[in-house]
Structures are given as structure tokens and as C-alpha cells.
Image (cartoon, rainbow, N blue to C red; front, side, top):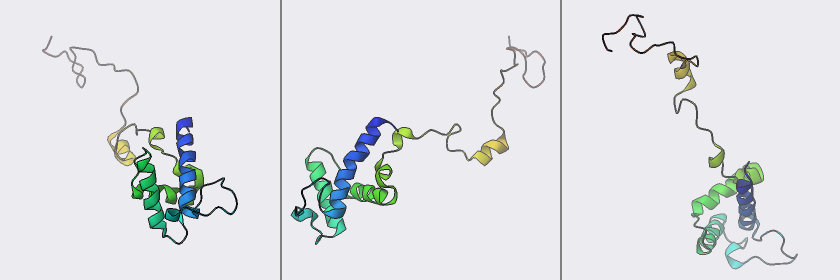
Length: 129
């Protein structure tokens, strides 16, 4: 996983922990949560507050993104916060189902034996030049 992706996931972790528990990691024991992250507020309200705070600080975030990240963290911890888009591979045959590719036949990886001026299916010289 690229370092930039790991760094961004760890950045998100601090924010998601504040949404989940009301406090960011590393605070002194006995610290009370900010009012917008208090445990008396709903999870949805805390996510909205976090999205507003991040947006105001120059990181535009929708509340749905905060929810998506929180769910990812709940299911997979830090790896669930990673943006996998930079790591996705484009399938060799695009969106075509592998069964369709197999049924139609995969393109040959052998060099072409076709010679210019010859019909590839009949082996006879074509009338073109």
C-alpha cells in the first residue's frame, strides 16, 4: 500500500475515533468531549459535526463520507479507512465478464503471421496492392 494512502488512513483514524468516542486519541485522562462530540449527541450528529469541522479546516468532507469511513473502521480498523482507488487494477478486458471473454476466445499472444497484401483467412493474394 502506498505511504500516502497509509498516512491518509491514519489521519482519518484520529477523526473517526473522536466521532466514535467523543475524544481524539492521546488526550489527558478526565478530558471532557467538545459539546459537538459529546456522547449525549447521536452518532449522526457527531458525524455531521466532524464533516463540518473538516470542511471548515480546508478538507471538504460530506457527512456521508464520515459515515462511510466510520463503518470501514468498524469492519476493518485502519485498513478500512484506506482509499483503495490508487491500488485498483483495471481488468485486462475492461468490464467484460471472464465467462464472456472465455466464450469468445482470448486474443492470441502469438505474433501475427498475416502478411500485408494477403487475405488472412484464405492465404491468397488480395487485389489490393
